[in-house]
Length: 325
Image (cartoon, rainbow, N blue to C red; front, side, top):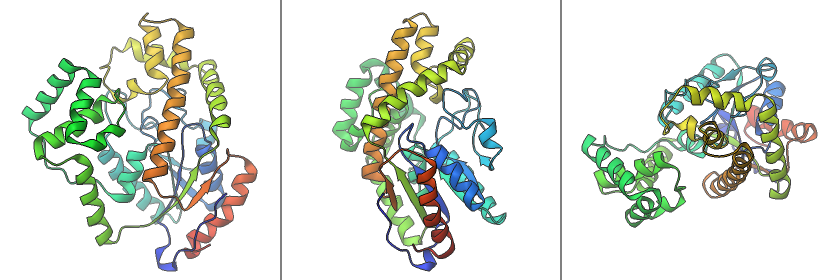
């Protein structure tokens, strides 16, 4: 475990952020910390905001939710997409509410875009004309994801970090550069510079990054546990609703593969194998993103355990009380 450098007292963090790849144990750590510091847990997972798939999105159980206040879990229906901007406004309100109640805010999740929006702000991109949005949708449909992504990278090289299957973000990046002539990454940089000049609130970031050789077997086992706990029933219920396939929840790792089974496009064994591989790929992408985009105050290269929580808790208490270790 890498220990942090002291903060000046005037920079006491407004919230503790617990981040890491899927399956790293961040939810369990957040719960242990919240119990130890009288905290309120605020969700920063873009799939756990939806109420329709508690099991397949690994939302906290009702028993865990009873141990500490939980906010922004299961607040949207699948057909009501939640954007980073929408989530950020809600998270800001929940942090303020926790502060007003004399509780510490513990923000937990693996969605880097959400955490970056909260900690660094959102790009003030001008409104995108409807004609540009429609043109982007037509291009994507005509070219396919791979060719559309290649076209986008010519105009916005940083879009190479986007997965070919992430249609929503590919379209957003294309719309911004097509409408403004400026890549989305440049807008983000501008917003971060403005936020830095305004003196944003600070956060104490704990990053869990267990070794890949330990994480991947746990992810495989967790998916089996999800299926045994009713995950397939959740996927079937979503499939019966005939929702738009481009909705964020329906593209979630695990859900997407099970929906293909529900549609009769693949066998259950093949869907499970595909979901396992997609989950490992997702964890790898998260790890890469956090390593390059989210500076951490405390890096923990191990899986969650009660002993780990006991070691971290005193550090968090000192940070919240004095802003130093």
